[in-house]
Length: 240
Ligand code: SF4
Ligand code: FES
Image 1 (cartoon, rainbow, N blue to C red):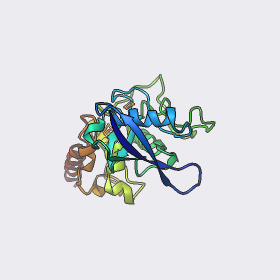
Image 2 (image 1 turned 90 degrees about the vertical axis):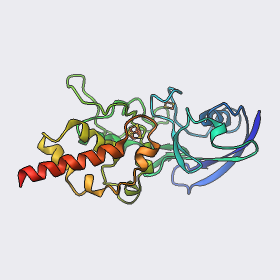
Image 3 (image 1 turned 90 degrees about the horizontal axis):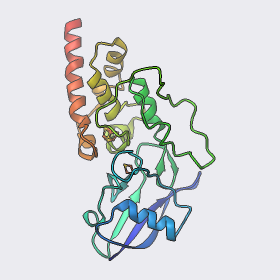
Image 4 (image 1 turned 180 degrees about the vertical axis):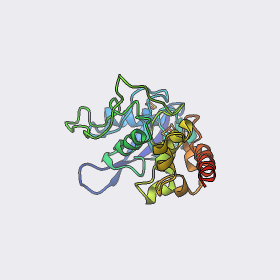
Protein backbone atom coordinates (compact mmCIF):
# COMPACT_ATOMS: atom_id res chain seq x y z
CA UNK A 1 0.00 0.00 0.00
CA UNK A 2 1.07 3.59 -0.66
CA UNK A 3 0.70 6.56 1.63
CA UNK A 4 -0.16 9.68 -0.30
CA UNK A 5 -1.50 13.12 0.50
CA UNK A 6 -4.72 14.29 -1.07
CA UNK A 7 -4.85 18.09 -1.30
CA UNK A 8 -8.56 18.78 -1.72
CA UNK A 9 -10.35 21.93 -2.81
CA UNK A 10 -12.97 22.90 -0.22
CA UNK A 11 -15.66 25.51 -0.63
CA UNK A 12 -19.06 25.70 1.01
CA UNK A 13 -21.62 28.40 0.28
CA UNK A 14 -20.06 31.81 -0.11
CA UNK A 15 -16.91 31.00 1.81
CA UNK A 16 -13.63 31.59 -0.04
CA UNK A 17 -12.08 28.45 -1.53
CA UNK A 18 -9.26 26.78 0.36
CA UNK A 19 -7.43 23.46 0.41
CA UNK A 20 -7.35 20.73 3.04
CA UNK A 21 -4.91 17.86 3.12
CA UNK A 22 -5.62 14.25 4.03
CA UNK A 23 -3.18 11.37 4.40
CA UNK A 24 -4.65 8.36 2.61
CA UNK A 25 -3.45 4.78 2.38
CA UNK A 26 -4.16 3.49 -1.08
CA UNK A 27 -3.39 0.66 -3.42
CA UNK A 28 -1.65 2.33 -6.39
CA UNK A 29 -3.89 0.31 -8.69
CA UNK A 30 -6.93 2.05 -7.22
CA UNK A 31 -8.45 5.10 -8.82
CA UNK A 32 -8.37 8.75 -7.75
CA UNK A 33 -12.09 8.58 -6.98
CA UNK A 34 -11.47 5.67 -4.57
CA UNK A 35 -9.18 7.89 -2.51
CA UNK A 36 -11.77 10.68 -2.43
CA UNK A 37 -14.33 8.16 -1.22
CA UNK A 38 -11.96 6.96 1.51
CA UNK A 39 -11.58 10.55 2.74
CA UNK A 40 -15.35 10.91 2.81
CA UNK A 41 -15.85 7.54 4.55
CA UNK A 42 -13.21 7.81 7.23
CA UNK A 43 -12.13 11.45 7.53
CA UNK A 44 -14.78 13.97 6.62
CA UNK A 45 -18.39 13.17 5.78
CA UNK A 46 -18.99 16.77 4.74
CA UNK A 47 -16.78 16.38 1.67
CA UNK A 48 -18.98 16.81 -1.40
CA UNK A 49 -18.19 15.11 -4.69
CA UNK A 50 -20.14 13.45 -7.42
CA UNK A 51 -20.01 9.92 -8.79
CA UNK A 52 -22.35 7.22 -10.02
CA UNK A 53 -21.25 4.53 -12.45
CA UNK A 54 -17.54 4.13 -11.63
CA UNK A 55 -16.85 2.96 -15.18
CA UNK A 56 -16.59 6.12 -17.32
CA UNK A 57 -20.20 6.12 -18.47
CA UNK A 58 -22.18 8.61 -16.41
CA UNK A 59 -19.78 11.58 -16.65
CA UNK A 60 -20.37 12.54 -13.02
CA UNK A 61 -16.88 12.28 -11.54
CA UNK A 62 -14.98 14.85 -13.63
CA UNK A 63 -12.43 16.79 -11.59
CA UNK A 64 -9.05 18.38 -12.11
CA UNK A 65 -6.29 16.10 -10.89
CA UNK A 66 -2.98 17.89 -10.50
CA UNK A 67 -4.41 20.59 -12.74
CA UNK A 68 -5.59 18.33 -15.56
CA UNK A 69 -9.20 17.38 -16.26
CA UNK A 70 -9.85 13.69 -15.61
CA UNK A 71 -12.65 11.24 -15.06
CA UNK A 72 -11.51 10.25 -11.59
CA UNK A 73 -13.16 6.81 -11.70
CA UNK A 74 -10.78 5.67 -14.45
CA UNK A 75 -7.66 7.61 -13.46
CA UNK A 76 -5.32 5.26 -11.64
CA UNK A 77 -3.52 6.69 -8.65
CA UNK A 78 -0.18 5.28 -9.80
CA UNK A 79 -0.51 7.30 -13.04
CA UNK A 80 -0.76 10.70 -11.34
CA UNK A 81 1.33 10.47 -8.15
CA UNK A 82 4.17 8.48 -6.59
CA UNK A 83 4.31 6.79 -3.19
CA UNK A 84 4.63 9.53 -0.57
CA UNK A 85 3.58 12.23 -3.03
CA UNK A 86 0.76 14.76 -3.10
CA UNK A 87 -2.22 14.67 -5.39
CA UNK A 88 -4.38 17.79 -5.81
CA UNK A 89 -8.07 17.39 -6.63
CA UNK A 90 -10.15 20.38 -7.67
CA UNK A 91 -13.55 20.95 -9.26
CA UNK A 92 -13.87 21.51 -13.00
CA UNK A 93 -13.18 25.05 -14.17
CA UNK A 94 -15.54 27.33 -16.06
CA UNK A 95 -18.61 26.19 -14.11
CA UNK A 96 -19.95 27.61 -10.84
CA UNK A 97 -18.80 25.60 -7.81
CA UNK A 98 -21.74 24.22 -5.86
CA UNK A 99 -19.74 22.65 -3.03
CA UNK A 100 -16.16 21.36 -2.68
CA UNK A 101 -15.60 19.23 -5.82
CA UNK A 102 -19.09 19.61 -7.30
CA UNK A 103 -19.85 22.09 -10.04
CA UNK A 104 -23.14 23.17 -11.56
CA UNK A 105 -23.21 21.67 -15.07
CA UNK A 106 -26.37 23.66 -15.83
CA UNK A 107 -24.58 25.95 -18.33
CA UNK A 108 -23.58 22.89 -20.38
CA UNK A 109 -27.10 21.42 -20.22
CA UNK A 110 -28.65 24.71 -21.34
CA UNK A 111 -26.26 25.00 -24.27
CA UNK A 112 -26.85 21.38 -25.32
CA UNK A 113 -30.58 22.11 -25.30
CA UNK A 114 -30.04 25.30 -27.32
CA UNK A 115 -28.31 23.28 -30.05
CA UNK A 116 -31.19 20.78 -30.07
CA UNK A 117 -29.28 17.96 -28.36
CA UNK A 118 -30.61 18.16 -24.79
CA UNK A 119 -28.49 16.38 -22.22
CA UNK A 120 -29.58 12.88 -21.27
CA UNK A 121 -28.10 13.20 -17.79
CA UNK A 122 -29.49 16.61 -16.97
CA UNK A 123 -31.91 15.30 -14.40
CA UNK A 124 -30.13 12.26 -12.99
CA UNK A 125 -26.83 14.06 -12.52
CA UNK A 126 -28.09 17.12 -10.74
CA UNK A 127 -25.78 17.84 -7.81
CA UNK A 128 -28.70 19.14 -5.84
CA UNK A 129 -30.23 15.76 -5.03
CA UNK A 130 -30.21 15.10 -1.34
CA UNK A 131 -28.82 18.53 -0.58
CA UNK A 132 -32.11 20.31 -0.13
CA UNK A 133 -31.37 22.51 -3.13
CA UNK A 134 -33.86 22.41 -5.97
CA UNK A 135 -32.50 21.95 -9.50
CA UNK A 136 -32.89 25.08 -11.60
CA UNK A 137 -36.25 25.08 -13.34
CA UNK A 138 -34.77 26.33 -16.62
CA UNK A 139 -32.70 23.23 -17.43
CA UNK A 140 -34.52 21.77 -20.42
CA UNK A 141 -35.32 18.07 -20.14
CA UNK A 142 -35.86 15.53 -22.86
CA UNK A 143 -39.48 14.86 -23.58
CA UNK A 144 -40.63 11.29 -24.14
CA UNK A 145 -42.72 12.48 -27.10
CA UNK A 146 -39.89 13.88 -29.16
CA UNK A 147 -36.87 12.43 -30.91
CA UNK A 148 -33.51 14.01 -30.25
CA UNK A 149 -30.05 13.55 -31.62
CA UNK A 150 -27.27 12.67 -29.25
CA UNK A 151 -23.65 13.66 -29.67
CA UNK A 152 -22.14 10.19 -30.24
CA UNK A 153 -19.98 8.92 -27.35
CA UNK A 154 -20.48 12.13 -25.34
CA UNK A 155 -21.10 11.41 -21.66
CA UNK A 156 -21.90 15.07 -20.92
CA UNK A 157 -19.15 15.37 -18.33
CA UNK A 158 -18.21 19.01 -19.02
CA UNK A 159 -14.50 18.20 -19.00
CA UNK A 160 -13.96 19.75 -22.45
CA UNK A 161 -15.46 23.03 -21.28
CA UNK A 162 -13.28 23.04 -18.17
CA UNK A 163 -10.16 22.70 -20.30
CA UNK A 164 -11.20 25.24 -22.94
CA UNK A 165 -9.18 28.50 -22.76
CA UNK A 166 -11.93 30.43 -24.55
CA UNK A 167 -14.65 29.22 -22.16
CA UNK A 168 -12.41 30.50 -19.36
CA UNK A 169 -12.69 34.04 -20.68
CA UNK A 170 -16.15 34.00 -22.25
CA UNK A 171 -18.94 32.16 -20.39
CA UNK A 172 -21.33 32.75 -23.30
CA UNK A 173 -19.13 30.84 -25.77
CA UNK A 174 -20.96 27.67 -26.77
CA UNK A 175 -17.89 25.55 -26.22
CA UNK A 176 -16.69 22.18 -27.49
CA UNK A 177 -19.49 19.68 -26.82
CA UNK A 178 -22.37 21.98 -27.92
CA UNK A 179 -20.56 22.98 -31.12
CA UNK A 180 -19.74 19.33 -31.80
CA UNK A 181 -23.45 18.58 -31.37
CA UNK A 182 -24.22 21.10 -34.14
CA UNK A 183 -21.52 19.55 -36.35
CA UNK A 184 -23.07 16.11 -36.33
CA UNK A 185 -26.49 17.53 -37.23
CA UNK A 186 -25.23 19.58 -40.18
CA UNK A 187 -26.42 23.06 -41.01
CA UNK A 188 -29.68 22.50 -42.86
CA UNK A 189 -31.63 24.10 -40.03
CA UNK A 190 -31.25 27.89 -40.24
CA UNK A 191 -31.31 28.23 -36.46
CA UNK A 192 -28.31 25.91 -36.08
CA UNK A 193 -26.44 27.76 -38.82
CA UNK A 194 -27.16 31.03 -37.01
CA UNK A 195 -25.82 29.63 -33.71
CA UNK A 196 -22.70 28.13 -35.28
CA UNK A 197 -21.96 31.33 -37.23
CA UNK A 198 -22.69 33.64 -34.27
CA UNK A 199 -20.29 35.61 -32.13
CA UNK A 200 -20.27 32.76 -29.60
CA UNK A 201 -19.97 30.06 -32.25
CA UNK A 202 -17.17 28.45 -34.25
CA UNK A 203 -15.18 31.62 -34.84
CA UNK A 204 -14.50 32.10 -31.09
CA UNK A 205 -12.56 28.83 -31.00
CA UNK A 206 -8.78 29.37 -30.87
CA UNK A 207 -8.00 25.85 -32.12
CA UNK A 208 -6.19 25.00 -28.90
CA UNK A 209 -7.53 21.43 -29.05
CA UNK A 210 -7.39 21.21 -25.25
CA UNK A 211 -10.93 19.81 -25.45
CA UNK A 212 -9.87 16.85 -27.58
CA UNK A 213 -6.81 16.26 -25.40
CA UNK A 214 -8.88 15.80 -22.22
CA UNK A 215 -12.14 14.31 -23.55
CA UNK A 216 -12.42 10.89 -21.88
CA UNK A 217 -14.61 9.54 -24.66
CA UNK A 218 -14.14 9.40 -28.42
CA UNK A 219 -15.82 12.67 -29.29
CA UNK A 220 -12.80 14.67 -30.51
CA UNK A 221 -14.71 17.95 -30.23
CA UNK A 222 -11.81 20.04 -31.53
CA UNK A 223 -11.82 18.23 -34.86
CA UNK A 224 -15.60 18.54 -35.03
CA UNK A 225 -15.40 22.31 -34.45
CA UNK A 226 -12.89 22.61 -37.30
CA UNK A 227 -15.25 20.62 -39.55
CA UNK A 228 -18.15 22.83 -38.47
CA UNK A 229 -16.13 25.86 -39.54
CA UNK A 230 -15.75 24.25 -42.94
CA UNK A 231 -19.51 23.65 -43.08
CA UNK A 232 -20.25 27.26 -42.11
CA UNK A 233 -17.81 28.57 -44.72
CA UNK A 234 -19.41 26.38 -47.41
CA UNK A 235 -22.85 27.71 -46.49
CA UNK A 236 -21.60 31.30 -46.64
CA UNK A 237 -20.10 30.71 -50.09
CA UNK A 238 -23.34 29.21 -51.36
CA UNK A 239 -25.32 32.12 -49.94
CA UNK A 240 -22.99 34.75 -51.42
S1 SF4 B 1 -17.27 16.12 -25.63
FE1 SF4 B 1 -16.03 14.73 -24.32
S2 SF4 B 1 -15.28 16.04 -22.68
FE2 SF4 B 1 -16.97 17.17 -23.67
S3 SF4 B 1 -18.79 16.69 -22.47
FE3 SF4 B 1 -18.70 15.17 -24.15
S4 SF4 B 1 -17.54 13.42 -23.32
FE4 SF4 B 1 -17.21 15.13 -21.91
S1 FES C 1 -18.44 7.79 -11.91
FE1 FES C 1 -19.49 7.69 -13.82
S2 FES C 1 -18.00 8.46 -15.22
FE2 FES C 1 -16.92 8.35 -13.36
